[in-house]
Amino acid sequence: MSTPTTPYTPDLAGREPVQAMRDTAARIAGIVAPWTPAQFERSYAPGKWSARLILIHLAQAELALGYRARMALTVPNYTAQSFDQDDWLAKEHELSGRDAALSFATLSTMNVELFSKLSPADRQLTLSHPEYGALTVDWVIHHMAGHQIHHLKHFEAIA
Image (cartoon, rainbow, N blue to C red):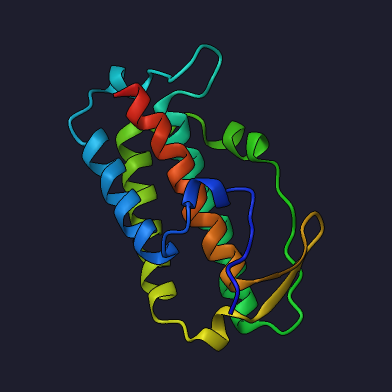
């Protein structure tokens, strides 16, 4: 089984994705645990999302991509829908930093638990995506792991 290439492959840097997700979620939780509401409003660069908005985005990504994986695992010939991350964030942008961190942690835990139990055959199940074309559950897992690491770097910069 070859390693899939995703937009976040450089962030994952060859790590095993499920363990990387465990490690990254724990690292993010450790960084943000002592933060006050004001600290969640800091950003890593001018004009970029605050830590709170990144946490909301991460929770939404866990929800959406975890759903895609679950559908691919249970629905033959599943076709994923695209979504606009900015539109999603605009609908839930008022969630507190603490609640966003808890949401991300919970959804990531659920996804890691599922992904850790998948067989190699499960991970090779396919789905289609309007932008990316033919994908596998393994691609989704690698994408999610790299995406988390991508944003971990932002939390480290903010801290």
